[in-house]
Amino acid sequence: MSRSSGLYRLQEIDLDSDRLKERLEEIRVSLDDSIEISQLRAGLAENESSMATVRSAAVRAKNDVEDQRLKLQNTERGLYGGSVQNPKELEDLQMESESLKRHLETLEDLYLEVMLEQDEVERAMGASSASLQAAEADQAVLHAELISERENIDGRLANLEAEREVASASVAEQDRKAYENLRDRLGGVAVVVLNGDSCGVCGLTLSASSRQLVGSGDDLIHCIQCGRILYGG
Image (cartoon, rainbow, N blue to C red; front, top):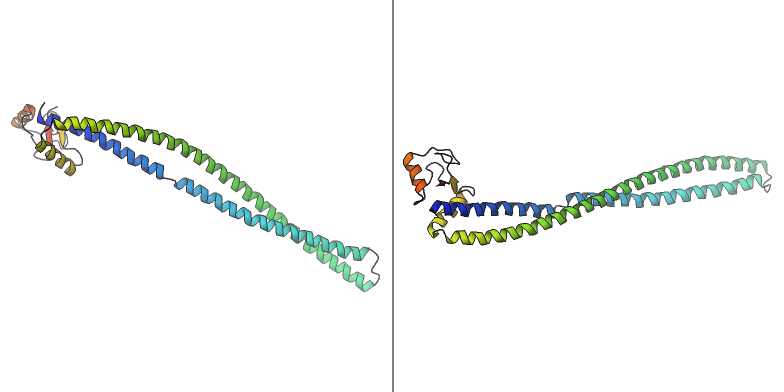
């Protein structure tokens, strides 16, 4: 096995590990992401608060209507019950009765408005609750899938770590250090397979002698343009 081929195998393992670790980070972010659920819960809480307010208003409006009806009944009892005979007092009671009726109509209209508002809030609260339940159910399914995938990735990473130990054992320490230094500097790709007579990354065409040296595998040949280790494949 040539020196570059051993490093190329090491790089394949490292790149696979990099991809899996990136996916693990995506999974972590997805598992931590609860923005939608939080927004839905906040919306439901707001609707519940509105419902408490409108219910209190409905109780007050209903009591106002009932109190007004009682006042009207008492006035009309005096007006039509025969206990009052004085014309002036009867006229006053008649005027009071008409005033109470007008105010009763106003209170009944207000009560109706409050009840209609309560119906709207109840519908909104029901919709919010349904949306939250659906989102929580979807999230539970997604989380189960992501956790299963995470466990699978953890197992694959453990296998790759074992493979890396084996692959690393066949590489000279100085070659491994050179490879790891290049990986750090060049975005994770330190070894590149030739594309014909050219560097597979930057496209520089190799001289015939350089191509021959790469093919022999006795030494590590670097691309003079991008600096990566060249591998004949």
